[in-house]
Image (cartoon, rainbow, N blue to C red):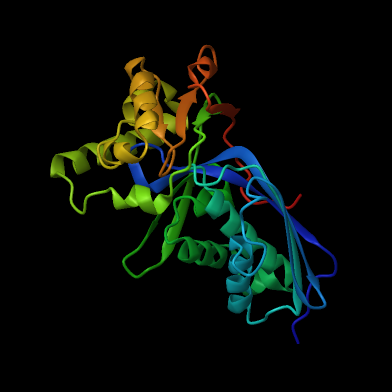
Length: 298
């Protein structure tokens, strides 16, 4: 008979930035901006409490993304609890390209596993990554949300998801410029062509390889390494102000990119001198470190 943990379990999960310019659907980075969640098994029913980002508009029932991820994990573990209480304190902006949905999914599968006695034996870390990536549809955000740091992720032809952590030079930080308007991932993906020129694909392959080296210890190469020809320009109609900011920063040799599907702009830096002042009016600028911890109890 399966037993559940007594009392609440807690997890904090970082924001993430995917693509990082040329690494479309492959490269992801965890950032020091964390949602905190708590869950426990109760006698019956479902109670969902949300503070912070999304408190006014996310569903407080079985449609909540964390709850859906928890249910999927419980199914993998072969058990559903009689009732659940979930409490979320959210700071990651929603629909801004900072991995809020991946943070929710990773939090959900992590919490569910911790609530089941022996859950870590039944669902190991590889299984947790696989489940989170299946729920999200791709691993580039969920992998750094789960593992922390800089991660190269993908899917083998047999459907197996993989995630390989790589080093980040401690001199590297990031500044994110978050616009007030949201852009859905579905809309941003819908603007991408089904085919791209071979020369563009080759250029991005080279830049993505260089980006691994640049983040690992050659930050002077970040401007060159973050150039993209596969996805950012195609998305300009959905986020013209974001691409204008990327263009302006890159013209001054700042390694700036669209974070994930946008519209947030991320700039790599080893200093914030003058960079925060480049924030457009009405936007929010945040200096964030690279978070090496991934999903952790708090």
